[in-house]
Length: 62
Image (tube, rainbow, N blue to C red; front, side, top):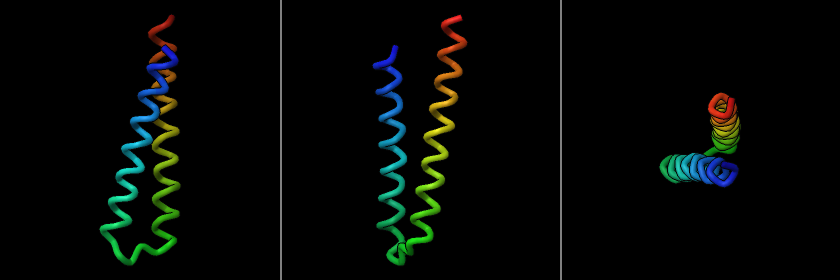
């Protein structure tokens, strides 16, 4: 179970990173503020995904 969780977590992180690099390269005027905003948003996304995963696993176990 833990291995599966890790794999899902890593794939979601990779997706977010890919989005981040794409958006950074698309906008040549990649100002530091937009990058910071995006980083914060991506961290939030990862956190919520992780929380949902844990919640669903907890429900399945009980």
